Image (cartoon, rainbow, N blue to C red; front, side, top):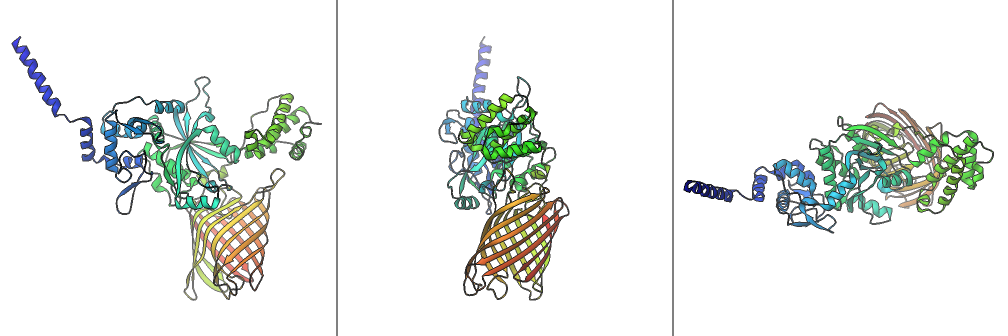
Length: 635
């Protein structure tokens, strides 16, 4: 009995001493974190969005706020890590949610950090009740991921170069085993609207002074916005992420919602931020570092496509415009006449009188697609043409019968993953006014009317940052011939149902022969115009324009500035590997000694492959001729 009591006391004292010598979990983890340098781990930097500066220090691209647990967290990875460890180790410590509306345990606000720290440390933290986060997971029911590219939309500066976002997919329905994509959720990153002025908006976006945030909405909302309102096709790329990686993506998105970043229109934009999420989920991925200084959404699709096995399937979701145009092509000549007449009269009798039941079904179905395409906002807001559509629906119900599902052919020539690189270098030679030159070209983005159409809008040019320099072989002069800041040409082919004008805008510094210049001169130019385009044979665009040009230069004689306007005609063929563009422009100047200006230009482009093209361009300006020959490399 005494021996048993002694043994028990000895065991109790020994255990008490041993327990007293074991440091608390927080202290132990902090020691390990410092010794094993967790704060220097690439995944920790990705989680907090740290970027290394020229002096070797770090700074997160997230703005100061609830995203950081340490006051020094934005610039000190170790300080933020230690503060996170301390917060995870004490459930009584409550931190602000990203929107600053709630106080919750740190594990509920930063679930992705918790997953990563538990994995690298082997230590399991307590799992507090996280009602909001658990509800978030319950609503999303995440099973897989899809990367979505929304095609180019020139009427909005923020979407002129395309847009990408992430779709979080639910499992097939337990009821019938079908996938209902519209019930999935789309996650995007976009600039917060701070001005309705497009010039202010563009300046803030280009300079990185506009705040950017993540948002999440049901996928049907995204479809309505892009497919319906803006008539933009959606290209959907299913991704091969395993369940653990999907869990990490969703956890990290929860951390990012409400966090603020500086939105950089040409670099840290929608596409860049989504790629950074993928890198957090799968450490082996290296996506953002492969992007050029100017991150184009289409280029990021190509980056994902280059990762073996990452893209498992590609889907095309046509816009309401594509749906209408496809259905229109299924109509016979009489049905087309009736639909055109209805589009002008809004008289339902034009869709039915004298037609068979089948023809009535065809015209009524096409009329509904037409109204959806031309008046999407009125249909949604239940105003204007919404009431006409209700009448069409009632007539269609009366006719009866089932319309087969309309199959819209995939326009693979416009798929972004097959597009040429958005950047371009060029080398070549020139003969200009009996002098010879070597040429060097560089274009930052994106696509001109002579470039192959594959992967880009077939009737548009969007160029930002194109520079051309020359070396004169006769006098050894090196000169900047052109600095194109921004140029957009939108050819909008008119037809029975589209009368939208074509338009163009250019801001640049040019060098050449102009009115009132003794020789070569350099000027700053802002020009634009509006016109009408017709397309023939699917690939021949003919356009007439009314153009206006404003220029200023100290090289101009008498007047240092001038404003002029006049007509131009354009012909363009672009199909396969060959393209041709010719334009003739007459301008009458308001200022200057010579008031008439004439310019005729022609260019041909032969695409050798996805990376190289050969281009010849000729120009006659005021009876001075120029001929350029170049080879381009796209990347």
